Image 1 (cartoon, rainbow, N blue to C red):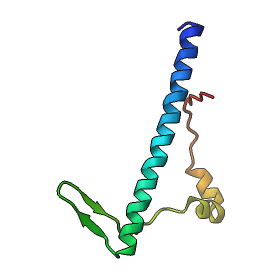
Image 2: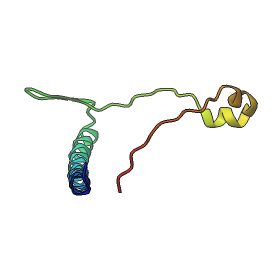
Image 3: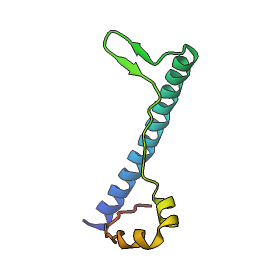
Image 4: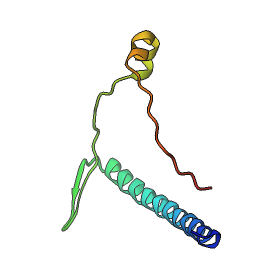
Length: 91
């Protein structure tokens, strides 16, 4: 890729990121309004002609690696492995 093509690609990527951020913010605003409505009406489920919204509490459990490392440092080190990946950062 030439320098000109790379500049164009970076500029296009920046513009698409900006647009994606705007869309994400707009989607969050709409989702928040739906959640507020459902919470105010004390609803967990809402159905329309071609859509269904479910908004309920989900309980799960996760392994607390931070506490495990604190309480069992030697064992945590024994079962920890290094990994390598490549990361692309465009600024």
